[in-house]
Image 1 (tube, rainbow, N blue to C red):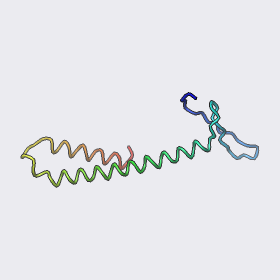
Image 2: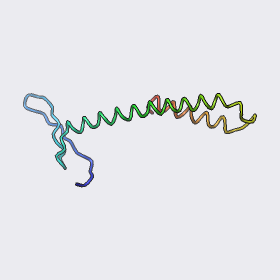
Image 3: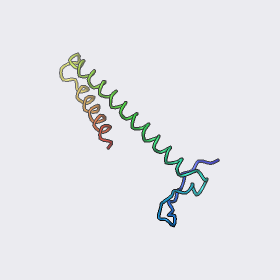
Image 4: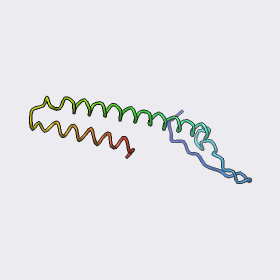
Length: 94
């Protein structure tokens, strides 16, 4: 079976209820695809939360050990700013 992007069409029953028909290409059930999508979104959400937690720990560790760098070391500010931007992006999903 070849990999493809499934195409699902929403149809309306005579009663007006909308249903999701199987993939037009392979017949994969639309409801199964929605369940898989929900699972994927939940997994990525947990992953993002874990990444935020790890980045916070790194930033805190860096700040705690920051005094061991030489005065004026430009790497300190750059690393801290990068970590802060990553954490902010992950927290706000943008």
